[in-house]
Amino acid sequence: QVQLVESGGGWVQPGGSLRLSCATSGIIFKILPMGWYRQAPGKQRELVAGITRVGSTNYADAVKGRFTISRDNAKNTVTLQMNSLKPEDTAVYYCNINPPLEKGASWGQGTQVTVSS
Image (cartoon, rainbow, N blue to C red; front, top):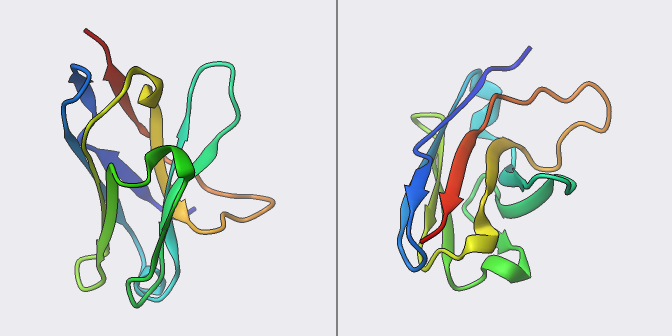
């Protein structure tokens, strides 16, 4: 299995910020498109932001203008800067290749983000 370790989650008040980090394993991840995903209770996992090898990005409509994805290919890390957080951003956040494997995808434990007052 491919190792994916997410960190940086926690609790924050509405309007606050968090920075999530993803440490990946394997040199192959330096060339693969990566993404941040999230899953809220009772909902399907959704793609929040994606980034290509060369740094082209795309975002879900719900987070455009608030979240920024970046990567450091030399360090095999992917970062998600989240600003102006809203309660509806509350979810477990995961990183993975983008798109993930249709079958046999490897997911880490994720990191919990809770936005509440």
